[in-house]
Image 1 (spheres, rainbow, N blue to C red):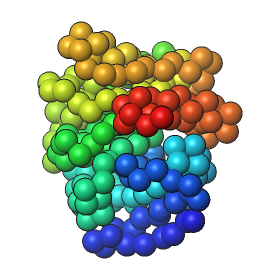
Image 2 (image 1 turned 45 degrees about the horizontal axis):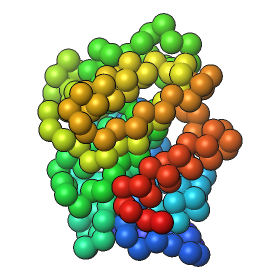
Image 3 (image 1 turned 120 degrees about the horizontal axis):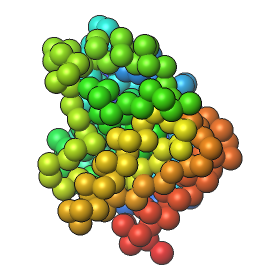
Image 4 (image 1 turned 135 degrees about the horizontal axis):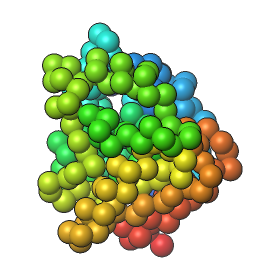
Length: 237
């Protein structure tokens, strides 16, 4: 069942599979450079998530730049979660720029977040880790302009850097295409987590670039891997 509704004035779309687990709700943040995107942008992705994970998925239509900032987007996601989740566990999913929104909200919410599912996420919002030589990354000029607006009131060079966590995050499932400009920051996050005994599973999807989740075959592969990861951490047989 798919249903559009508002939670605290924020538009959401929920996807409830016929047979669902009740241990956690997945909250999803779409991509779009922080400046565009809506509940339709990754509707197919959310449908696959709900079907494969067998859990309710709630997509959040967070506010966008230039009228609003990254921090407003995080506020929106946090408000939706606190308004709906109750005692149910939370899984945060995010694609591209939405990955940063999910990580930041997870840091605020704390222990109820059981896991993160991040696909080709923007983790270094300063863009210092961006590999401009990679053949299939997001558009550099657009990303630079967008993140300059999105990170306000901070200057871009002081924007959040989620690839360098200072405290233990929830278990992270991380997938990025091998041809994506965001591979370096994904690798650094995985390396730091491994060095500190934190759980982060990095999946490099061979031959794929940014936005590979729009390809049904790649999406199914990654979501099934994410499902196995979630099952291990939520102890679901």
